[in-house]
Image 1 (cartoon, rainbow, N blue to C red):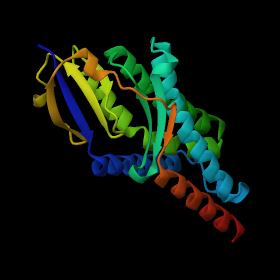
Image 2: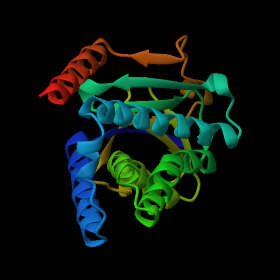
Image 3: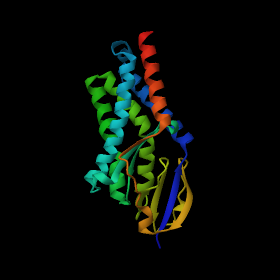
Image 4: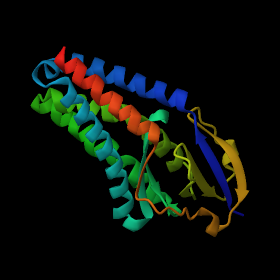
Length: 226
């Protein structure tokens, strides 16, 4: 019998993983003798912050494209920002097969992470290297989820309305599969109608995110003018 396992992300180890990835990639960049520091001299700091923000938005759009190319309708995909949790997110409003979620998870990691990082190294484009490093830092949890889900033979993926939760639907007893980065907080008997998330908004932005963005841009302007 299928069970629905509700997972909640452990944001502290997730953020620490991102920091470790960031440091390791900076070390690799130094070993390869690609100097990213001139970026901060050539481009005003405010524009670097804007580019990083746009790159994070592109990251989520690529998740959506990953769902779309595997058969999910556009009206079943929504986006959101909750910077108070350190999260930009893409939600799929229906349960999807394993293939769909795996494609979605790897899209930004590969397209604007691995590929762009390699191009930045090969063509010596420090700005592209910097943006790719920040993306890979953010995509580290995508990779963790990709590895975790890919090891489950028969599984479907669904969402809750919480940005830091997700649901795996499987006949396998997933309580035996542990992870440092997320934990099972609830186990329910599976009913298909329970895992269709209704949402009238295509994009949701929390009030805290708006405030944070304003502060973020003001900080960038001040640093640029100093």
